Image 1 (cartoon, rainbow, N blue to C red):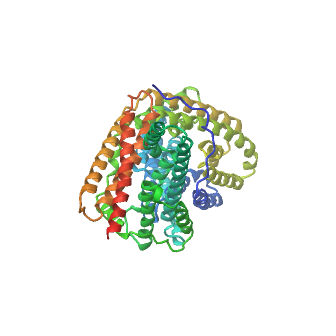
Image 2: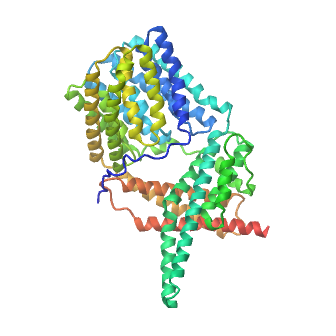
Image 3: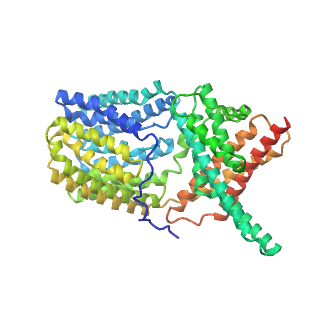
Length: 567
Protein backbone atom coordinates (compact mmCIF):
# COMPACT_ATOMS: atom_id res chain seq x y z
CA UNK A 1 0.00 0.00 0.00
CA UNK A 2 1.39 3.40 -1.00
CA UNK A 3 1.62 6.12 1.69
CA UNK A 4 -0.64 9.13 1.37
CA UNK A 5 0.76 12.40 0.09
CA UNK A 6 0.13 15.00 2.81
CA UNK A 7 -1.13 18.53 2.36
CA UNK A 8 -1.87 19.49 5.95
CA UNK A 9 1.19 20.43 7.95
CA UNK A 10 3.49 20.77 4.93
CA UNK A 11 3.67 24.55 5.37
CA UNK A 12 3.69 24.54 9.16
CA UNK A 13 6.46 26.68 10.63
CA UNK A 14 8.95 25.07 12.99
CA UNK A 15 11.16 26.61 15.61
CA UNK A 16 14.19 28.49 14.33
CA UNK A 17 17.59 26.93 14.76
CA UNK A 18 19.59 28.08 17.77
CA UNK A 19 22.30 29.30 15.41
CA UNK A 20 20.11 30.60 12.56
CA UNK A 21 22.05 33.87 12.57
CA UNK A 22 25.42 32.21 12.02
CA UNK A 23 24.93 31.03 8.42
CA UNK A 24 22.86 34.16 7.73
CA UNK A 25 25.61 36.52 8.87
CA UNK A 26 28.39 34.38 7.45
CA UNK A 27 26.99 34.36 3.94
CA UNK A 28 26.51 38.15 4.01
CA UNK A 29 30.08 38.72 5.20
CA UNK A 30 31.36 36.23 2.63
CA UNK A 31 29.38 37.68 -0.29
CA UNK A 32 29.66 41.41 0.42
CA UNK A 33 33.41 42.14 -0.09
CA UNK A 34 33.74 40.34 -3.46
CA UNK A 35 30.52 41.85 -4.81
CA UNK A 36 31.33 45.34 -3.59
CA UNK A 37 34.82 45.05 -5.07
CA UNK A 38 33.36 44.04 -8.43
CA UNK A 39 30.88 46.90 -8.14
CA UNK A 40 33.73 49.38 -7.62
CA UNK A 41 35.54 47.93 -10.63
CA UNK A 42 32.41 48.03 -12.78
CA UNK A 43 32.52 44.26 -13.34
CA UNK A 44 29.37 42.95 -11.68
CA UNK A 45 29.04 40.61 -14.66
CA UNK A 46 31.70 38.47 -12.91
CA UNK A 47 29.68 38.18 -9.71
CA UNK A 48 28.36 34.72 -10.56
CA UNK A 49 31.90 33.32 -10.26
CA UNK A 50 32.66 34.95 -6.93
CA UNK A 51 29.22 33.90 -5.66
CA UNK A 52 30.22 30.29 -6.31
CA UNK A 53 33.00 30.56 -3.75
CA UNK A 54 31.14 32.85 -1.35
CA UNK A 55 28.15 30.52 -0.99
CA UNK A 56 30.41 27.86 0.49
CA UNK A 57 29.98 29.86 3.70
CA UNK A 58 26.55 28.24 4.10
CA UNK A 59 28.01 24.86 5.04
CA UNK A 60 29.32 23.02 8.11
CA UNK A 61 28.27 25.48 10.84
CA UNK A 62 27.39 22.65 13.23
CA UNK A 63 30.82 20.98 12.98
CA UNK A 64 33.80 21.47 15.29
CA UNK A 65 36.29 23.89 13.82
CA UNK A 66 38.91 21.29 12.89
CA UNK A 67 36.27 19.21 11.10
CA UNK A 68 34.70 22.38 9.67
CA UNK A 69 38.00 23.40 8.09
CA UNK A 70 38.23 20.08 6.26
CA UNK A 71 34.55 20.04 5.27
CA UNK A 72 34.64 23.57 3.86
CA UNK A 73 37.76 22.77 1.88
CA UNK A 74 36.01 19.77 0.31
CA UNK A 75 32.87 21.85 -0.38
CA UNK A 76 34.97 24.48 -2.11
CA UNK A 77 36.73 21.82 -4.16
CA UNK A 78 33.38 20.33 -5.15
CA UNK A 79 31.99 23.74 -6.01
CA UNK A 80 34.94 24.70 -8.20
CA UNK A 81 34.98 21.27 -9.87
CA UNK A 82 31.29 21.50 -10.78
CA UNK A 83 31.75 25.08 -11.93
CA UNK A 84 34.75 24.08 -14.04
CA UNK A 85 32.87 21.24 -15.76
CA UNK A 86 29.96 23.57 -16.48
CA UNK A 87 32.13 26.36 -17.87
CA UNK A 88 34.10 24.00 -20.10
CA UNK A 89 30.87 22.49 -21.43
CA UNK A 90 29.43 25.95 -22.06
CA UNK A 91 32.55 26.94 -23.98
CA UNK A 92 32.55 23.82 -26.14
CA UNK A 93 28.91 23.62 -27.21
CA UNK A 94 25.90 25.83 -27.67
CA UNK A 95 23.40 22.96 -27.76
CA UNK A 96 20.86 23.55 -25.01
CA UNK A 97 19.92 19.86 -24.98
CA UNK A 98 23.53 18.84 -24.37
CA UNK A 99 23.93 21.48 -21.66
CA UNK A 100 20.76 20.34 -19.87
CA UNK A 101 22.04 16.76 -20.00
CA UNK A 102 25.37 17.78 -18.50
CA UNK A 103 23.54 19.76 -15.81
CA UNK A 104 21.34 16.77 -14.93
CA UNK A 105 24.34 14.44 -14.62
CA UNK A 106 26.17 17.00 -12.48
CA UNK A 107 23.12 17.34 -10.24
CA UNK A 108 22.94 13.56 -9.75
CA UNK A 109 26.63 13.35 -8.84
CA UNK A 110 26.35 16.31 -6.48
CA UNK A 111 23.27 14.82 -4.79
CA UNK A 112 24.93 11.43 -4.30
CA UNK A 113 28.20 12.87 -2.95
CA UNK A 114 26.49 15.28 -0.55
CA UNK A 115 24.24 12.54 0.83
CA UNK A 116 27.08 10.01 1.09
CA UNK A 117 29.36 12.42 2.95
CA UNK A 118 26.49 13.79 5.06
CA UNK A 119 27.67 17.31 4.51
CA UNK A 120 24.34 18.64 5.78
CA UNK A 121 22.22 21.64 4.75
CA UNK A 122 21.99 23.15 2.21
CA UNK A 123 23.28 19.97 0.59
CA UNK A 124 23.62 19.68 -3.16
CA UNK A 125 21.14 22.43 -4.07
CA UNK A 126 23.64 25.32 -3.93
CA UNK A 127 26.20 23.35 -5.93
CA UNK A 128 23.58 22.50 -8.57
CA UNK A 129 22.33 26.08 -8.70
CA UNK A 130 25.81 27.41 -9.48
CA UNK A 131 26.85 24.74 -11.97
CA UNK A 132 23.50 24.82 -13.81
CA UNK A 133 23.54 28.59 -14.14
CA UNK A 134 27.15 28.49 -15.38
CA UNK A 135 26.14 26.11 -18.18
CA UNK A 136 24.11 28.87 -19.79
CA UNK A 137 26.58 31.72 -19.22
CA UNK A 138 28.38 32.85 -22.43
CA UNK A 139 31.89 31.47 -22.14
CA UNK A 140 35.16 31.10 -24.01
CA UNK A 141 37.59 28.36 -23.10
CA UNK A 142 40.38 30.86 -22.43
CA UNK A 143 38.21 32.61 -19.81
CA UNK A 144 37.65 29.50 -17.70
CA UNK A 145 40.90 29.62 -15.61
CA UNK A 146 40.32 33.23 -14.65
CA UNK A 147 36.72 32.61 -13.66
CA UNK A 148 37.71 29.59 -11.57
CA UNK A 149 40.40 31.71 -9.89
CA UNK A 150 37.71 34.20 -8.86
CA UNK A 151 35.66 31.38 -7.33
CA UNK A 152 38.69 30.04 -5.46
CA UNK A 153 39.60 33.47 -4.11
CA UNK A 154 36.05 34.13 -2.90
CA UNK A 155 35.91 30.61 -1.47
CA UNK A 156 39.12 31.18 0.49
CA UNK A 157 37.55 34.31 1.98
CA UNK A 158 34.39 32.34 2.85
CA UNK A 159 36.58 29.71 4.57
CA UNK A 160 38.16 32.41 6.73
CA UNK A 161 34.75 33.88 7.56
CA UNK A 162 33.43 30.51 8.75
CA UNK A 163 36.54 29.73 10.78
CA UNK A 164 36.83 33.16 12.44
CA UNK A 165 34.32 32.50 15.30
CA UNK A 166 36.65 29.76 16.54
CA UNK A 167 39.00 32.45 17.78
CA UNK A 168 36.38 33.58 20.30
CA UNK A 169 34.64 30.29 21.13
CA UNK A 170 36.83 27.40 20.05
CA UNK A 171 34.49 24.68 21.36
CA UNK A 172 31.20 26.35 20.44
CA UNK A 173 29.82 23.62 18.12
CA UNK A 174 30.67 20.82 20.58
CA UNK A 175 29.08 22.75 23.45
CA UNK A 176 25.87 23.33 21.47
CA UNK A 177 25.61 19.70 20.39
CA UNK A 178 26.13 18.52 23.97
CA UNK A 179 23.57 21.01 25.31
CA UNK A 180 21.02 19.81 22.73
CA UNK A 181 21.60 16.22 23.81
CA UNK A 182 21.15 17.10 27.49
CA UNK A 183 17.96 19.10 26.86
CA UNK A 184 16.47 16.39 24.64
CA UNK A 185 17.28 13.76 27.27
CA UNK A 186 15.66 15.92 29.95
CA UNK A 187 12.50 16.28 27.86
CA UNK A 188 12.40 12.51 27.37
CA UNK A 189 12.83 11.85 31.09
CA UNK A 190 10.02 14.28 31.90
CA UNK A 191 7.71 12.66 29.35
CA UNK A 192 8.44 9.22 30.81
CA UNK A 193 7.80 10.47 34.34
CA UNK A 194 4.50 11.98 33.23
CA UNK A 195 3.56 8.74 31.49
CA UNK A 196 4.41 6.77 34.62
CA UNK A 197 2.18 9.10 36.62
CA UNK A 198 -0.72 8.57 34.26
CA UNK A 199 -0.23 4.80 34.42
CA UNK A 200 -0.24 4.87 38.21
CA UNK A 201 -3.40 6.99 38.24
CA UNK A 202 -5.04 4.53 35.86
CA UNK A 203 -4.14 1.66 38.15
CA UNK A 204 -5.51 3.48 41.17
CA UNK A 205 -8.77 4.12 39.32
CA UNK A 206 -9.22 0.36 39.01
CA UNK A 207 -8.89 -0.21 42.78
CA UNK A 208 -12.58 -1.08 43.13
CA UNK A 209 -12.37 -3.97 40.70
CA UNK A 210 -11.53 -7.55 41.53
CA UNK A 211 -7.93 -8.66 41.99
CA UNK A 212 -8.13 -10.64 38.77
CA UNK A 213 -9.28 -7.61 36.79
CA UNK A 214 -6.62 -5.46 38.35
CA UNK A 215 -3.94 -8.00 37.56
CA UNK A 216 -5.07 -8.30 33.97
CA UNK A 217 -5.18 -4.52 33.57
CA UNK A 218 -1.69 -4.18 35.03
CA UNK A 219 -0.33 -6.80 32.67
CA UNK A 220 -1.96 -5.13 29.67
CA UNK A 221 -0.66 -1.73 30.75
CA UNK A 222 2.86 -3.06 31.25
CA UNK A 223 2.80 -4.83 27.87
CA UNK A 224 1.61 -1.69 26.15
CA UNK A 225 4.22 0.39 27.93
CA UNK A 226 7.03 -1.97 27.01
CA UNK A 227 5.99 -2.13 23.38
CA UNK A 228 5.52 1.57 22.78
CA UNK A 229 7.12 3.76 25.45
CA UNK A 230 10.52 3.68 23.77
CA UNK A 231 9.03 4.66 20.39
CA UNK A 232 7.66 8.07 21.38
CA UNK A 233 8.63 11.25 19.51
CA UNK A 234 10.51 12.43 22.61
CA UNK A 235 12.51 9.19 22.62
CA UNK A 236 13.39 9.45 18.94
CA UNK A 237 14.35 13.10 19.27
CA UNK A 238 16.52 12.41 22.30
CA UNK A 239 18.32 9.42 20.80
CA UNK A 240 18.94 11.37 17.60
CA UNK A 241 20.32 14.35 19.56
CA UNK A 242 22.65 12.10 21.55
CA UNK A 243 23.95 10.43 18.40
CA UNK A 244 24.42 13.86 16.78
CA UNK A 245 26.45 14.94 19.79
CA UNK A 246 28.63 11.83 19.54
CA UNK A 247 29.07 12.45 15.81
CA UNK A 248 30.34 15.94 16.67
CA UNK A 249 32.58 14.90 19.54
CA UNK A 250 34.02 11.81 17.89
CA UNK A 251 35.40 13.70 14.93
CA UNK A 252 39.05 12.95 14.42
CA UNK A 253 41.60 15.23 16.00
CA UNK A 254 43.20 16.02 19.34
CA UNK A 255 40.95 15.54 22.38
CA UNK A 256 41.34 18.48 24.72
CA UNK A 257 40.23 18.36 28.34
CA UNK A 258 37.18 20.44 27.39
CA UNK A 259 36.19 17.89 24.79
CA UNK A 260 36.61 15.02 27.25
CA UNK A 261 34.44 16.87 29.78
CA UNK A 262 31.76 17.29 27.13
CA UNK A 263 32.00 13.58 26.33
CA UNK A 264 31.26 12.79 29.99
CA UNK A 265 28.10 14.93 29.80
CA UNK A 266 26.92 13.13 26.66
CA UNK A 267 27.46 9.85 28.51
CA UNK A 268 25.14 11.25 31.22
CA UNK A 269 22.51 12.04 28.57
CA UNK A 270 22.94 8.58 27.08
CA UNK A 271 22.45 6.93 30.47
CA UNK A 272 19.38 9.08 31.10
CA UNK A 273 17.74 7.58 28.02
CA UNK A 274 18.41 4.07 29.26
CA UNK A 275 17.39 4.72 32.89
CA UNK A 276 14.95 7.67 32.93
CA UNK A 277 13.43 6.73 36.30
CA UNK A 278 16.79 7.28 38.01
CA UNK A 279 17.56 10.60 36.32
CA UNK A 280 16.95 14.15 37.51
CA UNK A 281 15.93 16.20 34.43
CA UNK A 282 16.61 19.46 36.28
CA UNK A 283 20.26 18.47 36.60
CA UNK A 284 20.49 17.78 32.87
CA UNK A 285 18.99 21.19 32.10
CA UNK A 286 21.35 22.90 34.53
CA UNK A 287 24.32 21.29 32.79
CA UNK A 288 22.96 22.45 29.42
CA UNK A 289 22.63 26.04 30.66
CA UNK A 290 26.18 25.96 31.98
CA UNK A 291 27.48 25.19 28.48
CA UNK A 292 26.52 28.62 27.17
CA UNK A 293 29.41 30.94 26.57
CA UNK A 294 32.99 29.97 27.43
CA UNK A 295 32.58 29.09 31.10
CA UNK A 296 34.01 25.91 32.60
CA UNK A 297 32.31 22.68 31.54
CA UNK A 298 30.39 21.05 34.43
CA UNK A 299 32.09 18.01 35.90
CA UNK A 300 30.31 14.68 35.46
CA UNK A 301 31.37 11.48 37.24
CA UNK A 302 32.55 8.13 35.92
CA UNK A 303 35.62 9.04 33.87
CA UNK A 304 36.18 5.33 33.23
CA UNK A 305 33.22 5.36 30.83
CA UNK A 306 35.38 7.29 28.36
CA UNK A 307 37.33 4.07 27.81
CA UNK A 308 34.53 3.15 25.40
CA UNK A 309 35.13 6.42 23.55
CA UNK A 310 38.85 5.62 23.36
CA UNK A 311 38.03 2.26 21.79
CA UNK A 312 35.71 3.87 19.24
CA UNK A 313 38.26 6.50 18.23
CA UNK A 314 40.87 3.80 17.76
CA UNK A 315 38.70 2.01 15.19
CA UNK A 316 39.20 2.86 11.50
CA UNK A 317 36.61 5.27 10.09
CA UNK A 318 34.08 3.88 7.62
CA UNK A 319 34.83 5.26 4.14
CA UNK A 320 32.04 7.48 2.86
CA UNK A 321 31.97 5.88 -0.59
CA UNK A 322 30.38 2.75 0.87
CA UNK A 323 27.16 4.77 1.10
CA UNK A 324 27.06 5.44 -2.65
CA UNK A 325 25.52 2.06 -3.56
CA UNK A 326 22.27 2.49 -1.58
CA UNK A 327 21.98 6.04 -2.98
CA UNK A 328 21.91 4.88 -6.61
CA UNK A 329 18.08 5.08 -6.99
CA UNK A 330 18.05 8.64 -5.62
CA UNK A 331 20.85 9.60 -8.01
CA UNK A 332 18.95 8.10 -10.96
CA UNK A 333 15.83 9.99 -9.91
CA UNK A 334 17.81 13.21 -9.78
CA UNK A 335 19.43 12.70 -13.20
CA UNK A 336 16.18 11.70 -14.90
CA UNK A 337 14.02 14.34 -13.23
CA UNK A 338 16.45 17.19 -13.86
CA UNK A 339 16.97 16.19 -17.49
CA UNK A 340 13.27 15.84 -18.26
CA UNK A 341 12.47 19.11 -16.46
CA UNK A 342 15.12 20.94 -18.50
CA UNK A 343 13.92 19.38 -21.77
CA UNK A 344 10.32 20.32 -20.98
CA UNK A 345 11.39 23.89 -20.26
CA UNK A 346 13.22 24.03 -23.59
CA UNK A 347 10.15 22.68 -25.38
CA UNK A 348 8.07 25.47 -23.86
CA UNK A 349 10.57 28.06 -25.14
CA UNK A 350 11.79 29.24 -21.74
CA UNK A 351 15.13 31.01 -22.00
CA UNK A 352 16.55 29.68 -18.73
CA UNK A 353 15.91 25.93 -18.53
CA UNK A 354 18.35 25.63 -15.64
CA UNK A 355 15.66 27.07 -13.35
CA UNK A 356 13.46 24.04 -14.05
CA UNK A 357 16.48 21.78 -13.61
CA UNK A 358 17.35 23.28 -10.23
CA UNK A 359 13.72 23.11 -9.10
CA UNK A 360 13.64 19.40 -9.86
CA UNK A 361 17.00 18.86 -8.13
CA UNK A 362 15.80 20.60 -4.97
CA UNK A 363 12.87 18.20 -4.54
CA UNK A 364 14.61 14.90 -3.95
CA UNK A 365 14.57 13.80 -0.34
CA UNK A 366 14.85 10.43 1.42
CA UNK A 367 11.53 9.15 0.04
CA UNK A 368 8.59 10.06 -2.18
CA UNK A 369 6.46 11.42 0.65
CA UNK A 370 9.16 13.88 1.70
CA UNK A 371 9.84 14.70 -1.97
CA UNK A 372 6.16 15.58 -2.39
CA UNK A 373 6.25 17.83 0.68
CA UNK A 374 9.36 19.58 -0.59
CA UNK A 375 7.67 20.11 -3.98
CA UNK A 376 4.67 21.80 -2.35
CA UNK A 377 6.97 23.98 -0.27
CA UNK A 378 9.05 24.91 -3.31
CA UNK A 379 6.06 25.92 -5.41
CA UNK A 380 4.43 27.98 -2.65
CA UNK A 381 7.71 29.69 -1.74
CA UNK A 382 8.52 30.54 -5.35
CA UNK A 383 5.04 31.88 -6.07
CA UNK A 384 5.24 34.24 -3.11
CA UNK A 385 8.87 35.00 -3.94
CA UNK A 386 8.09 36.31 -7.42
CA UNK A 387 5.54 38.67 -5.86
CA UNK A 388 8.26 39.93 -3.52
CA UNK A 389 10.56 40.37 -6.52
CA UNK A 390 7.89 42.38 -8.33
CA UNK A 391 7.63 44.68 -5.32
CA UNK A 392 11.40 45.08 -4.84
CA UNK A 393 12.61 45.34 -8.45
CA UNK A 394 11.91 49.11 -8.77
CA UNK A 395 14.23 49.68 -5.81
CA UNK A 396 16.89 47.34 -7.23
CA UNK A 397 16.79 49.22 -10.55
CA UNK A 398 17.83 52.47 -8.87
CA UNK A 399 21.45 51.49 -9.50
CA UNK A 400 24.06 48.79 -9.28
CA UNK A 401 24.70 49.51 -5.60
CA UNK A 402 21.01 49.08 -4.79
CA UNK A 403 21.02 45.80 -6.71
CA UNK A 404 23.94 44.45 -4.67
CA UNK A 405 22.42 45.58 -1.37
CA UNK A 406 19.08 43.97 -2.19
CA UNK A 407 20.82 40.69 -2.96
CA UNK A 408 22.69 40.85 0.34
CA UNK A 409 19.44 41.45 2.22
CA UNK A 410 17.80 38.46 0.55
CA UNK A 411 20.87 36.33 1.30
CA UNK A 412 20.43 37.09 4.97
CA UNK A 413 16.67 36.59 4.90
CA UNK A 414 16.90 33.23 3.14
CA UNK A 415 19.23 31.73 5.73
CA UNK A 416 17.39 33.32 8.63
CA UNK A 417 14.03 31.86 7.56
CA UNK A 418 14.74 28.57 5.81
CA UNK A 419 15.29 26.63 9.05
CA UNK A 420 11.65 27.31 10.04
CA UNK A 421 10.33 25.87 6.79
CA UNK A 422 11.76 25.51 3.31
CA UNK A 423 8.96 27.51 1.68
CA UNK A 424 9.60 30.49 3.96
CA UNK A 425 13.25 30.63 2.98
CA UNK A 426 12.31 30.24 -0.70
CA UNK A 427 10.44 33.53 -0.48
CA UNK A 428 13.86 35.20 -0.21
CA UNK A 429 15.80 32.76 -2.40
CA UNK A 430 13.53 33.40 -5.41
CA UNK A 431 13.95 37.19 -5.69
CA UNK A 432 17.66 36.82 -4.91
CA UNK A 433 18.09 34.39 -7.84
CA UNK A 434 16.12 36.71 -10.12
CA UNK A 435 18.21 39.72 -9.11
CA UNK A 436 21.48 37.84 -9.67
CA UNK A 437 20.54 37.47 -13.34
CA UNK A 438 20.66 41.27 -13.56
CA UNK A 439 24.32 41.45 -12.56
CA UNK A 440 25.18 40.89 -16.20
CA UNK A 441 22.72 43.51 -17.41
CA UNK A 442 19.14 44.76 -17.22
CA UNK A 443 16.40 42.13 -17.57
CA UNK A 444 12.74 42.83 -18.29
CA UNK A 445 10.92 42.03 -14.99
CA UNK A 446 7.73 40.71 -16.56
CA UNK A 447 9.62 38.14 -18.62
CA UNK A 448 11.74 37.07 -15.64
CA UNK A 449 8.63 36.53 -13.53
CA UNK A 450 6.85 34.56 -16.24
CA UNK A 451 9.81 32.31 -16.94
CA UNK A 452 10.40 31.69 -13.25
CA UNK A 453 6.77 30.69 -12.67
CA UNK A 454 6.74 28.36 -15.67
CA UNK A 455 10.04 26.74 -14.74
CA UNK A 456 8.96 26.28 -11.12
CA UNK A 457 5.79 24.45 -12.11
CA UNK A 458 7.52 22.41 -14.81
CA UNK A 459 10.41 21.45 -12.53
CA UNK A 460 8.12 20.50 -9.63
CA UNK A 461 5.68 18.42 -11.69
CA UNK A 462 8.22 16.66 -13.90
CA UNK A 463 10.64 16.16 -11.02
CA UNK A 464 7.99 14.51 -8.86
CA UNK A 465 6.80 12.27 -11.69
CA UNK A 466 10.38 11.09 -12.16
CA UNK A 467 10.55 10.24 -8.45
CA UNK A 468 7.40 8.14 -8.81
CA UNK A 469 8.71 6.41 -11.93
CA UNK A 470 12.09 5.42 -10.43
CA UNK A 471 11.39 2.98 -7.62
CA UNK A 472 13.69 2.68 -4.63
CA UNK A 473 13.62 -0.96 -3.58
CA UNK A 474 16.84 -0.43 -1.68
CA UNK A 475 14.95 1.41 1.06
CA UNK A 476 13.63 -1.96 2.25
CA UNK A 477 17.12 -3.44 2.00
CA UNK A 478 18.38 -0.68 4.28
CA UNK A 479 15.81 -1.68 6.90
CA UNK A 480 16.93 -5.32 6.68
CA UNK A 481 20.57 -4.30 7.09
CA UNK A 482 19.72 -2.01 10.00
CA UNK A 483 17.73 -4.80 11.67
CA UNK A 484 20.66 -7.15 11.33
CA UNK A 485 22.97 -4.49 12.77
CA UNK A 486 20.69 -3.92 15.77
CA UNK A 487 20.29 -7.62 16.45
CA UNK A 488 24.03 -8.23 16.12
CA UNK A 489 24.89 -5.25 18.36
CA UNK A 490 22.36 -6.38 20.96
CA UNK A 491 23.78 -9.91 21.00
CA UNK A 492 27.33 -8.62 21.43
CA UNK A 493 26.21 -6.34 24.25
CA UNK A 494 24.33 -9.18 25.94
CA UNK A 495 27.45 -11.38 25.79
CA UNK A 496 29.49 -8.64 27.44
CA UNK A 497 26.82 -8.28 30.13
CA UNK A 498 27.09 -12.00 30.83
CA UNK A 499 30.89 -11.85 30.96
CA UNK A 500 31.99 -11.47 34.61
CA UNK A 501 35.16 -9.61 33.54
CA UNK A 502 34.65 -7.76 30.23
CA UNK A 503 37.54 -5.77 28.78
CA UNK A 504 37.78 -2.19 30.12
CA UNK A 505 35.53 0.10 28.10
CA UNK A 506 34.16 -2.73 25.95
CA UNK A 507 30.65 -2.59 27.40
CA UNK A 508 30.42 1.18 27.07
CA UNK A 509 31.57 0.95 23.46
CA UNK A 510 29.05 -1.82 22.78
CA UNK A 511 26.28 0.30 24.31
CA UNK A 512 27.17 3.20 22.03
CA UNK A 513 27.23 0.98 18.96
CA UNK A 514 23.82 -0.45 19.88
CA UNK A 515 22.35 3.02 20.45
CA UNK A 516 23.64 4.21 17.08
CA UNK A 517 22.23 1.11 15.38
CA UNK A 518 18.81 1.78 16.91
CA UNK A 519 18.84 5.35 15.62
CA UNK A 520 19.82 4.15 12.14
CA UNK A 521 17.06 1.53 12.21
CA UNK A 522 14.42 4.11 13.07
CA UNK A 523 15.66 6.44 10.32
CA UNK A 524 15.59 3.57 7.82
CA UNK A 525 12.06 2.57 8.78
CA UNK A 526 10.78 6.13 8.47
CA UNK A 527 12.47 6.54 5.07
CA UNK A 528 11.08 3.24 3.76
CA UNK A 529 7.60 3.96 5.15
CA UNK A 530 7.37 7.05 2.94
CA UNK A 531 8.49 5.23 -0.22
CA UNK A 532 6.10 3.93 -2.89
CA UNK A 533 6.15 0.52 -4.55
CA UNK A 534 7.78 -0.95 -1.47
CA UNK A 535 7.42 -4.48 -0.12
CA UNK A 536 5.79 -4.78 3.29
CA UNK A 537 8.13 -3.84 6.12
CA UNK A 538 8.75 -6.37 8.92
CA UNK A 539 6.97 -4.21 11.49
CA UNK A 540 6.74 -6.85 14.21
CA UNK A 541 10.43 -7.63 13.89
CA UNK A 542 11.25 -3.91 14.00
CA UNK A 543 9.21 -3.36 17.19
CA UNK A 544 10.75 -6.46 18.76
CA UNK A 545 14.29 -5.34 17.87
CA UNK A 546 13.72 -1.79 19.17
CA UNK A 547 12.12 -2.97 22.40
CA UNK A 548 14.84 -5.51 23.14
CA UNK A 549 17.54 -3.07 22.13
CA UNK A 550 16.33 -0.41 24.55
CA UNK A 551 16.00 -2.99 27.32
CA UNK A 552 19.59 -4.08 26.71
CA UNK A 553 20.74 -0.46 26.88
CA UNK A 554 19.02 -0.14 30.24
CA UNK A 555 20.70 -3.34 31.41
CA UNK A 556 24.14 -1.89 30.61
CA UNK A 557 23.39 1.07 32.87
CA UNK A 558 22.23 -1.18 35.72
CA UNK A 559 25.36 -3.29 35.28
CA UNK A 560 27.61 -0.24 35.44
CA UNK A 561 25.93 1.06 38.57
CA UNK A 562 26.14 -2.36 40.21
CA UNK A 563 29.87 -2.44 39.48
CA UNK A 564 30.24 1.05 40.95
CA UNK A 565 28.41 -0.02 44.11
CA UNK A 566 30.61 -3.10 44.48
CA UNK A 567 33.72 -1.00 44.10
